[in-house]
Image 1: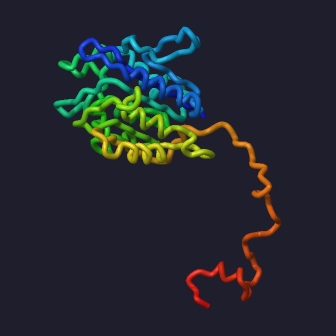
Image 2: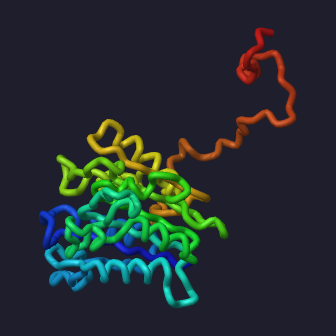
Image 3: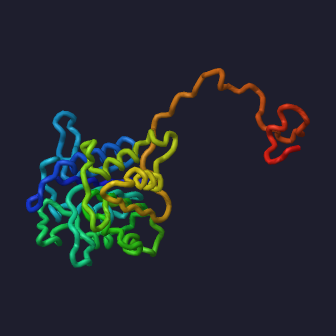
Amino acid sequence: MSRDVLVVGINTYTHLPSLSAPAVDAEAIAQRLAQDGDFHKIQRLPEAIDRSTQKPVVAKKLPVSQIQLEQALEQLFLPKSQQAPETALFYFSGHGIPDSKGFDKGYLATSDTDPRHPRSGISLHWLQWLLSGSPVKQQIIWLDCCHSGSLLVNVAAANPGHGESRDRCFVASSRDFESSWEDLNSSYSVLTKALLDGLDPNRLPGRWIDTFALVDYINQALKGELQTPVCTNFGEAINLTRTWQVSAQSTDHSQTDSGICPYKGLEFFDCNDEDPKYFFGRDR
Protein backbone atom coordinates (compact mmCIF):
# COMPACT_ATOMS: atom_id res chain seq x y z
CA MET A 1 0.00 0.00 0.00
CA SER A 2 1.49 3.33 -1.12
CA ARG A 3 1.50 6.15 1.45
CA ASP A 4 2.71 9.63 0.39
CA VAL A 5 3.26 12.86 2.36
CA LEU A 6 3.65 16.55 1.51
CA VAL A 7 4.92 18.69 4.40
CA VAL A 8 5.11 22.47 3.94
CA GLY A 9 6.68 24.93 6.34
CA ILE A 10 7.00 28.52 5.08
CA ASN A 11 9.11 31.01 7.03
CA THR A 12 9.84 33.51 4.26
CA TYR A 13 7.19 35.99 3.08
CA THR A 14 7.35 39.04 0.83
CA HIS A 15 4.18 40.86 1.90
CA LEU A 16 3.65 39.26 5.35
CA PRO A 17 5.85 39.06 8.48
CA SER A 18 8.48 36.33 8.36
CA LEU A 19 8.09 33.40 10.76
CA SER A 20 10.49 31.10 12.60
CA ALA A 21 8.44 28.05 13.65
CA PRO A 22 6.94 26.66 10.38
CA ALA A 23 10.12 25.13 8.96
CA VAL A 24 10.93 23.54 12.32
CA ASP A 25 7.32 22.34 12.60
CA ALA A 26 7.29 20.75 9.16
CA GLU A 27 10.67 19.05 9.51
CA ALA A 28 9.67 17.54 12.88
CA ILE A 29 6.45 16.17 11.35
CA ALA A 30 8.39 14.79 8.36
CA GLN A 31 10.88 13.03 10.61
CA ARG A 32 8.19 11.56 12.84
CA LEU A 33 6.29 10.15 9.86
CA ALA A 34 9.48 8.86 8.21
CA GLN A 35 10.64 7.13 11.38
CA ASP A 36 7.38 5.66 12.66
CA GLY A 37 4.75 6.04 9.94
CA ASP A 38 5.68 3.59 7.15
CA PHE A 39 5.23 6.32 4.54
CA HIS A 40 6.98 5.64 1.24
CA LYS A 41 7.46 9.16 -0.13
CA ILE A 42 7.84 12.34 1.89
CA GLN A 43 8.13 15.59 -0.07
CA ARG A 44 9.26 18.77 1.68
CA LEU A 45 8.54 22.37 0.63
CA PRO A 46 10.75 24.32 0.53
CA GLU A 47 13.47 21.68 0.39
CA ALA A 48 17.21 21.91 0.99
CA ILE A 49 20.00 19.37 1.52
CA ASP A 50 21.54 19.26 4.99
CA ARG A 51 25.32 19.51 4.54
CA SER A 52 26.13 17.32 7.52
CA THR A 53 23.79 14.44 6.70
CA GLN A 54 23.31 14.97 2.94
CA LYS A 55 19.60 14.34 3.49
CA PRO A 56 16.66 16.56 2.50
CA VAL A 57 15.25 18.94 5.12
CA VAL A 58 12.66 21.72 5.16
CA ALA A 59 14.57 24.89 4.25
CA LYS A 60 14.26 27.78 6.70
CA LYS A 61 14.98 30.65 4.29
CA LEU A 62 13.76 29.53 0.86
CA PRO A 63 10.40 30.72 -0.53
CA VAL A 64 7.44 28.69 -1.76
CA SER A 65 5.31 30.22 -4.51
CA GLN A 66 1.59 29.76 -5.02
CA ILE A 67 2.25 27.86 -8.25
CA GLN A 68 4.75 25.54 -6.53
CA LEU A 69 2.31 24.59 -3.78
CA GLU A 70 -0.63 24.16 -6.18
CA GLN A 71 1.41 21.84 -8.37
CA ALA A 72 2.63 19.82 -5.38
CA LEU A 73 -0.93 19.41 -4.07
CA GLU A 74 -2.21 18.35 -7.50
CA GLN A 75 0.62 15.84 -7.79
CA LEU A 76 -0.27 14.43 -4.35
CA PHE A 77 -4.06 14.18 -4.68
CA LEU A 78 -4.59 14.15 -8.46
CA PRO A 79 -1.53 12.33 -9.82
CA LYS A 80 -1.36 11.84 -13.57
CA SER A 81 -0.23 8.27 -12.95
CA GLN A 82 -2.91 5.58 -12.73
CA GLN A 83 -1.22 4.30 -9.56
CA ALA A 84 -2.45 6.88 -7.05
CA PRO A 85 -1.30 6.41 -3.46
CA GLU A 86 -3.68 4.64 -1.10
CA THR A 87 -2.98 7.28 1.56
CA ALA A 88 -2.01 10.95 1.07
CA LEU A 89 -1.16 13.35 3.91
CA PHE A 90 -0.80 17.12 3.56
CA TYR A 91 0.67 19.16 6.42
CA PHE A 92 0.97 22.96 6.28
CA SER A 93 2.54 25.43 8.72
CA GLY A 94 2.65 29.13 7.89
CA HIS A 95 0.38 32.15 7.60
CA GLY A 96 -3.35 31.78 7.07
CA ILE A 97 -5.60 34.56 5.74
CA PRO A 98 -9.36 34.83 6.36
CA ASP A 99 -11.79 35.30 3.50
CA SER A 100 -13.87 38.42 4.07
CA LYS A 101 -16.31 37.46 1.30
CA GLY A 102 -16.83 33.91 2.51
CA PHE A 103 -16.64 32.07 -0.82
CA ASP A 104 -13.08 30.80 -0.68
CA LYS A 105 -13.24 29.93 3.06
CA GLY A 106 -9.79 31.41 3.68
CA TYR A 107 -6.33 30.97 2.21
CA LEU A 108 -3.01 29.28 2.92
CA ALA A 109 -0.44 32.02 2.38
CA THR A 110 2.57 31.20 0.21
CA SER A 111 5.70 33.34 0.12
CA ASP A 112 4.33 35.53 -2.68
CA THR A 113 0.81 35.97 -1.23
CA ASP A 114 -0.29 39.59 -0.90
CA PRO A 115 -2.93 40.00 1.86
CA ARG A 116 -4.44 42.84 -0.17
CA HIS A 117 -5.11 40.23 -2.86
CA PRO A 118 -5.63 37.04 -0.83
CA ARG A 119 -6.44 34.95 -3.88
CA SER A 120 -2.72 34.96 -4.51
CA GLY A 121 -2.72 32.23 -1.82
CA ILE A 122 -4.13 28.71 -1.83
CA SER A 123 -7.91 28.84 -1.51
CA LEU A 124 -9.40 26.40 1.01
CA HIS A 125 -12.41 26.17 -1.30
CA TRP A 126 -10.04 25.05 -4.08
CA LEU A 127 -8.50 22.50 -1.68
CA GLN A 128 -11.96 21.07 -1.00
CA TRP A 129 -12.54 20.80 -4.76
CA LEU A 130 -9.20 19.03 -5.15
CA LEU A 131 -10.07 16.46 -2.48
CA SER A 132 -13.51 15.84 -3.94
CA GLY A 133 -12.01 14.79 -7.28
CA SER A 134 -9.09 12.85 -5.83
CA PRO A 135 -8.86 9.07 -6.35
CA VAL A 136 -6.90 8.75 -3.08
CA LYS A 137 -9.00 6.67 -0.67
CA GLN A 138 -7.39 7.89 2.56
CA GLN A 139 -6.93 11.67 2.74
CA ILE A 140 -5.32 13.48 5.68
CA ILE A 141 -5.12 17.28 6.02
CA TRP A 142 -3.33 19.00 8.94
CA LEU A 143 -3.29 22.82 8.83
CA ASP A 144 -1.29 24.75 11.43
CA CYS A 145 -2.14 28.34 10.54
CA CYS A 146 -4.51 31.14 11.52
CA HIS A 147 -8.18 30.83 10.46
CA SER A 148 -7.61 27.27 9.20
CA GLY A 149 -10.90 26.08 10.71
CA SER A 150 -12.62 27.64 7.70
CA LEU A 151 -12.03 24.34 5.93
CA LEU A 152 -14.42 22.69 8.39
CA VAL A 153 -17.19 25.27 8.58
CA ASN A 154 -19.70 22.64 7.53
CA VAL A 155 -19.50 18.89 7.20
CA ALA A 156 -20.70 18.75 3.61
CA ALA A 157 -17.90 21.03 2.47
CA ALA A 158 -15.26 19.40 4.66
CA ASN A 159 -16.09 15.91 3.40
CA PRO A 160 -16.29 16.44 -0.36
CA GLY A 161 -17.04 13.63 -2.74
CA HIS A 162 -19.81 11.16 -1.94
CA GLY A 163 -19.64 8.85 -4.96
CA GLU A 164 -17.12 6.44 -3.47
CA SER A 165 -16.05 5.51 0.02
CA ARG A 166 -13.35 7.82 1.41
CA ASP A 167 -11.60 7.94 4.76
CA ARG A 168 -10.66 11.49 5.71
CA CYS A 169 -9.02 13.24 8.66
CA PHE A 170 -9.08 17.04 8.96
CA VAL A 171 -7.16 18.83 11.73
CA ALA A 172 -7.07 22.64 11.83
CA SER A 173 -5.18 24.57 14.48
CA SER A 174 -7.86 27.19 15.14
CA ARG A 175 -11.42 28.20 14.34
CA ASP A 176 -12.11 30.39 11.32
CA PHE A 177 -12.01 33.60 13.41
CA GLU A 178 -9.00 32.67 15.59
CA SER A 179 -5.24 33.09 15.32
CA SER A 180 -2.72 30.28 15.88
CA TRP A 181 0.29 30.59 18.16
CA GLU A 182 3.72 29.19 18.92
CA ASP A 183 4.08 26.97 21.96
CA LEU A 184 5.69 28.83 24.86
CA ASN A 185 7.54 25.76 26.13
CA SER A 186 8.99 24.46 22.85
CA SER A 187 10.21 25.59 19.44
CA TYR A 188 7.03 24.33 17.77
CA SER A 189 3.62 25.81 17.13
CA VAL A 190 0.85 24.83 19.55
CA LEU A 191 -0.91 22.41 17.21
CA THR A 192 2.29 20.87 15.88
CA LYS A 193 3.50 20.19 19.43
CA ALA A 194 0.22 18.36 20.10
CA LEU A 195 0.52 16.47 16.80
CA LEU A 196 4.05 15.32 17.60
CA ASP A 197 3.10 14.20 21.09
CA GLY A 198 -0.04 12.50 19.84
CA LEU A 199 1.89 10.67 17.09
CA ASP A 200 4.54 9.37 19.51
CA PRO A 201 4.20 5.58 19.14
CA ASN A 202 5.44 5.03 22.68
CA ARG A 203 2.19 6.56 23.87
CA LEU A 204 0.30 3.43 22.77
CA PRO A 205 2.91 0.63 22.62
CA GLY A 206 2.05 -2.44 20.65
CA ARG A 207 -0.61 -0.86 18.43
CA TRP A 208 -1.07 1.67 15.64
CA ILE A 209 -1.83 5.27 16.50
CA ASP A 210 -4.61 6.07 14.04
CA THR A 211 -6.52 9.20 13.10
CA PHE A 212 -9.23 8.54 15.70
CA ALA A 213 -6.70 8.21 18.55
CA LEU A 214 -4.80 11.28 17.34
CA VAL A 215 -7.91 13.50 17.25
CA ASP A 216 -8.92 12.35 20.73
CA TYR A 217 -5.46 13.25 22.02
CA ILE A 218 -5.40 16.70 20.38
CA ASN A 219 -8.82 17.63 21.72
CA GLN A 220 -7.74 16.74 25.25
CA ALA A 221 -4.23 18.22 25.03
CA LEU A 222 -5.39 21.62 23.74
CA LYS A 223 -8.42 22.02 25.95
CA GLY A 224 -8.31 25.50 27.50
CA GLU A 225 -5.76 26.93 25.04
CA LEU A 226 -6.17 30.38 23.46
CA GLN A 227 -6.85 28.65 20.14
CA THR A 228 -9.44 25.93 19.66
CA PRO A 229 -8.48 23.11 17.28
CA VAL A 230 -11.09 21.90 14.81
CA CYS A 231 -10.79 18.17 14.17
CA THR A 232 -13.04 15.86 12.17
CA ASN A 233 -12.82 12.25 11.00
CA PHE A 234 -14.93 10.63 8.30
CA GLY A 235 -15.11 6.96 7.39
CA GLU A 236 -12.72 4.45 8.91
CA ALA A 237 -9.64 5.16 11.02
CA ILE A 238 -6.36 5.65 9.12
CA ASN A 239 -3.17 4.17 10.58
CA LEU A 240 -0.46 6.76 11.24
CA THR A 241 2.45 5.64 13.44
CA ARG A 242 3.52 2.62 15.48
CA THR A 243 6.57 1.18 17.22
CA TRP A 244 8.66 -1.14 15.07
CA GLN A 245 10.77 -2.66 17.85
CA VAL A 246 9.38 -5.77 19.54
CA SER A 247 10.09 -5.80 23.26
CA ALA A 248 11.93 -8.82 24.57
CA GLN A 249 9.78 -11.38 26.35
CA SER A 250 10.16 -11.37 30.12
CA THR A 251 11.99 -14.36 31.61
CA ASP A 252 10.85 -13.63 35.14
CA HIS A 253 9.98 -17.02 36.63
CA SER A 254 7.29 -15.40 38.74
CA GLN A 255 5.36 -14.73 35.52
CA THR A 256 5.63 -18.27 34.10
CA ASP A 257 2.73 -20.68 33.90
CA SER A 258 2.24 -22.51 37.16
CA GLY A 259 0.03 -25.12 35.52
CA ILE A 260 -3.07 -23.96 37.40
CA CYS A 261 -5.87 -22.55 35.27
CA PRO A 262 -7.56 -19.53 36.91
CA TYR A 263 -10.85 -20.32 35.14
CA LYS A 264 -13.27 -22.93 36.45
CA GLY A 265 -14.39 -24.09 33.05
CA LEU A 266 -16.95 -26.87 33.48
CA GLU A 267 -15.93 -27.71 37.03
CA PHE A 268 -18.58 -27.33 39.71
CA PHE A 269 -18.45 -24.72 42.46
CA ASP A 270 -18.15 -26.11 45.95
CA CYS A 271 -18.62 -24.85 49.50
CA ASN A 272 -15.07 -23.89 50.40
CA ASP A 273 -12.98 -20.76 50.98
CA GLU A 274 -12.07 -20.15 47.31
CA ASP A 275 -15.11 -20.81 45.09
CA PRO A 276 -17.38 -18.13 46.63
CA LYS A 277 -14.93 -15.52 45.32
CA TYR A 278 -16.29 -16.20 41.82
CA PHE A 279 -19.82 -15.20 42.82
CA PHE A 280 -20.94 -11.57 42.72
CA GLY A 281 -24.25 -10.17 43.85
CA ARG A 282 -25.16 -13.25 45.86
CA ASP A 283 -25.17 -13.62 49.61
CA ARG A 284 -25.61 -17.43 49.71
